[in-house]
Image (cartoon, rainbow, N blue to C red; front, side, top):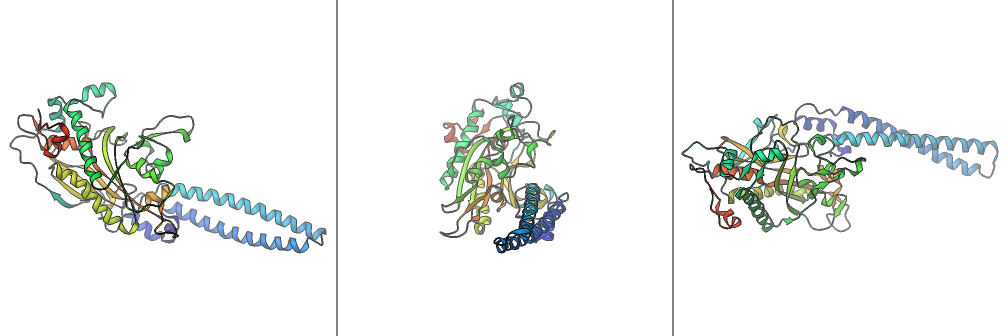
Length: 426
């Protein structure tokens, strides 16, 4: 959430910065509500001054009694009623302002490239070389089905479209990747947590999924809204909310990693990536989350991105790092790097991780603060997160980059100990 005071005091600047994201962001309701709020505050302050004067008059007339005292008492009662009415109007307007702010995206960072769509994203660096295959590469779903490690037909029978059953070495590969990633990240100072997979509305609002993207979420059906629970779209939601409504007293940065399932309706993506593991309603991911000081957050973003890259490098997977342009940024992000892994079967790079700095956008919504030093006033933290990595898409990348002409797949050396020494899928 943006700071209301900053928005109203720097309206044209905020409008211009949000304009970098593209059209369709209307700030005029916030300007109008802000002006109404300012006028109400001024009127209320004037009434309170009159109320204070009336109180003093009452004290002076208290000993005299009579009609003058009765008139003063009547005036004071009227002023109290008008102030109460003004306070109720002010409360309603501030509620509308808060609701409007919840729908506003974050301001792009100055270092975020300009652009309108993914076509304008900027390649920052690449690692490794594209695999040299002397045969026509197959897609991961063709490879996995032939190996007997994917069963999409039975998944569709059980649950419908955009689900998969992994079996045998496929299931072991998914589990091995999770253990491998967690071991690497915890060795780098991240604290592993296992959070709930169902969260409340406050948690989804704190990280920016609600209210704007409620149609993308799976949720329970309850008689009262306060009892609803949402299936997590990513571990970012429960892990970031670990410190909701808290003043963090321990030294920053705080680094967490979590392996969880993720659940997404994928609203609006019908017809896209309908085959295979790329865009599923349920998938697993290892997430990285950081709570940092404002002064260090962009250095921490570079560090977090390198931590996600390390997994790809250890697995020997060719990839590139892309800085998202302002028009392609996620709702809450100020700056984002996508890691895009090469898929020979598709002849394209596909996102496997997204590493973002949210600055204080989530912290303001969730009221996550820290105390810079003993006795100092609390400040909002900056939050960051990234996939380290999406496990299903890592399976996809291994199958496609390590495929052989005979249909078998080599297992990356770093992963072999997690598979009991298995060196190939055959």
